[in-house]
Amino acid sequence: MIDKTTSLLVSAMVFAATAGAVFAACSAQSEAYSRLWNAELQAKIDARIEKHRKADGAFEVAAPDGTEVKVEQISHAFQFGSHIFNFDQLGRDDWNDIYKATFTNLWNAATLPFYWGAMEPGEGAVRYGAGPRDSAAFWNSVDGLSAKDKAQFTEYRRPAPDPILEFCEANGIAPHGHVMIYPPFHPAWTTNGVDAAALADRYERRIRQLGAHYGARIPQWDVVNESVDRSCTTAGPFHDKVCWNRPHIRVPDDYTFRCYRWAEESFPREVKFVVNDSWREIYVPFVRQLIDRGAKIDVVGIQMHIFSADHARKIAAGEPCLANGTSWAPDDQMTMLRKLDTLGRPIHLSEITIPAFDDSPEGWAQQAKLARDNYRLWFSWPSIYRITWWNMVDYTYHKESLASGLYTKDMKKKPVFYALDKLINHEWKTRLTVKARDGKVSFRGFKGRYRLAWKDESGKGHLTIVEL
Image 1 (spheres, rainbow, N blue to C red):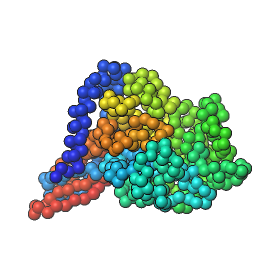
Image 2: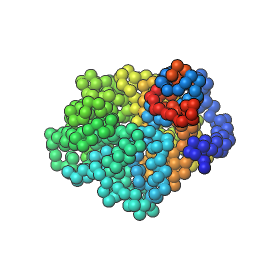
Image 3: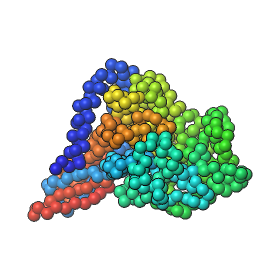
């Protein structure tokens, strides 16, 4: 029988053989891209990975000198993940199994959906646990519908969070709550016929309900999502009266700061609170003034979305391009990250969208190359501790109708899956054999959890689990 590791290696070899010719064919068109991602930059990335993602360790083992000890990394300290919004919703049990297995074979982190509109569509009726439309059987029965037609159901891409949290807890997956407050996705009853004071009361009640229900079970949350007004500039003033171009969206005065205060009062101290938005120059000063006023912002989230096939093609060609307001040129990214670092907070790359510019072999290969290069850059940056891919399956969200998944819509692995698997499960995992000396083994490896295994003179096996 072929074990999982062998199967993954074979798959990666197949990908390399089929995609290599495509990469070569693209290279002539990507000289500008190659100049951006040049050998000097790659060497710096490698050096940062070696410095910041590895550590030296010495661990006691009850083994005589010279005993060979197998050192196998079994998990990462770094958090790699995706949102898990299609939990049991893909239309077939085997597809659902593949989807969930990604969170045990590739990812170790998941972003759970807490959009208020779907969680409490009617006032007081909060959807924590599974209902009739939170079963795989229901979504299997409507699989003939398009993603747009499925969106008629409140529960589509918004499955009840408690069963997902139980899945995460059972499988050692680090959960992230997204999101407590995000005005475009609030239920209509929160604003209809209420004054500013009543609206603030409803925001506060929402946050306190989540704190009472979850406590410390979810270790980090986006408290407020995308609250920086797009009309703000560094010339000021800084405010959160969001211009969504939707007149029905109303928010309480100073709601971002007030929400962090309510969250701090409602959750255990160890729970981390995240601010989340896409890049623009106003972001850092906006967050800085919240921190200076006393908002408990523990993590800075930054989104990196490519929402256009044209943008994906330009970025892959090394052409200047602002995708969702952000330049993907590596030097520009590092400038952005340095500015975020002035806030003195760890960084969560919170929403990553890297699409193929089309469904051709060339488009798929370029998606894989973009993912590999950018993940290497992000993994090397010392303040980044978590990266979250956004839509893991192609075309499951009709408002982002791009081939941005790791899987096709019928759950076939794309080259981008194998590119990330090769990094996460092979290049960035330590496996070696060392010899015991003075009752210890010493080695250098990627930070995470390890299994140390050896046999004594009688052939009896021993193992211990350690953290590096």
